[in-house]
Length: 472
Image (cartoon, rainbow, N blue to C red):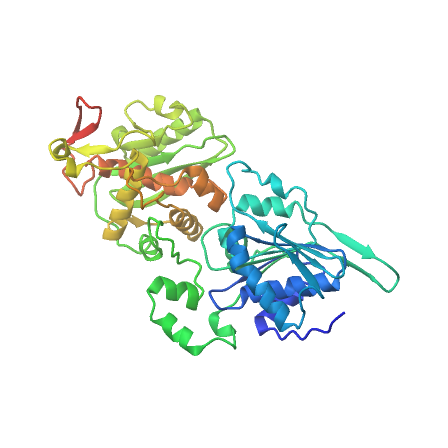
């Protein structure tokens, strides 16, 4: 076997140690552009493939075309740096997207994009994988990652007493900072000191790469704040996705804003779809969220009774209670006569002026979208304040960071990603964020104190062409 001279950086050396031990199953190697992530991933695959005859590896990315244009080219660069000529040491079959080594080890190039005809990634079911290198893992669906986890194999190979090896399954994920499964599966548990022993998180800043061009770092420092925070300082909490409804600073400010004075109390409640989920009940004074209650496994009667108790305790009028009645068939709403039943997919509220001026029409797909955008506007204005525990702050921040606009560049109605799409990234229902959104119903309806006095309630009227209008 050829002798390979591999001179990894300090962080790459640490990562390689974990990827060759007998405990670590998954390692997330995180860094920005030019941090040597792809180079290290390809080097690991080559070294392990040559060291373990008959082993099977996967190199995966969100799109096979991009994998061939980027990661595969890096693979060839690494092979060249290792003085491993193609056709003598390995053979790449472009038609089958397979790399075969001289010792019968195989590397499969895999497309891990979401395919509507294969939502459960059944196409991965035939692989028995010794190791996997997933490049730009932040782009991959958590469903695909879970399917891959089911394909990892504990393998042992023996040709003779002197030619043998065994290994536990290994997966290397390289990524840029992102708020999705890599955040909830790796970064957050790592930050809180509760990452499982079979998982490892290796943060690598751009300055950890001794081969980086200093000019690159200087140009990076001149970028916008989000880019600097993510790619220079490695701040996972910053998101550069233009579809994100609220940015990091706007979310952080919610917990430091001075409470807005107000004499009117409100209750917003997101009811669990199923008994195993949580129902959250939030108490507001004006636009100040100051109390949070949770109920797990409660039925609709128990939720309704609890809300009645909180109405008395916090002096909330029934007309100032808003409850999500999707999925529970109005069960809680029916038991609280006079409360507001919120239907997410109902029509957006239109101002009275929009009846005469089409330019003032609210072009939202539904009421939920309209309320989330109202939440964004009030957050930017600094008029919303949240008082809660550190744990609740983390949950709220995570969920609000997942709210994204759907296809913002098209000319259709403004809409958000579906709850199922949010759950795919968050791995749970955004109950806390939805409970905040529900409070915006009163602001959209111009019933909030910042718009008018309590005695001047707005009235809804119906017009011939089926829209809901606001008469101030």
